[in-house]
Image (tube, rainbow, N blue to C red; front, top):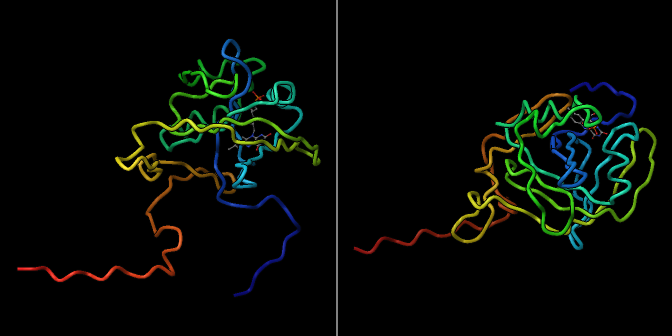
Length: 194
Ligand SMILES: Cc1cc2nc3c(=O)[nH]c(=O)nc-3n(C[C@H](O)[C@H](O)[C@H](O)COP(=O)(O)O)c2cc1C
């Protein structure tokens, strides 16, 4: 297959379209973030990259805290809204009908309507160019009990999570397998005793 070679760009997909909360219970803000991911398992670390001109940038810089709230396809419209409106002149919680609820480890509220929220404390920040990368430890997780099964495991497949790829939003689709399935031995079927 012939391929075209392009100059380097931020074309990694899919990524989450996460709702990142910052501020306080009295004055919360939320912005949509695509540039996020996991950087370490132990300790659990993440990053978000935020342009310095965003209203949220200085709030996160000053408080050193934020929360990453995962989004579902049902909240696609609100997620987009939080990515085009600024907290400078808009109360995005009121606009989207989101409820700000207290987190456990940070003063930043989380979004009640989101199935999972990651409470994050900034450990380092670095201005990379267009964006400041905030590296942070994930100090707590808030998971909606409706998606925790009888074994105490979080069933993310039931949440209807959303993804963002090259400017477009997508609903996650069919489950194709689970970690390590390619090498897992199949369980032998026991003969049915009659
Ligand atoms: C899908 C999507 C992803 C986005 N990802 C980022 C991002 O990773 N970093 C960033 O600085 N802005 C990102 N934005 C833009 C901000 O969310 C947007 O400028 C927002 O209005 C900033 O809000 P604030 O001024 O209240 O902080 C994204 C917007 C959308 C719609």
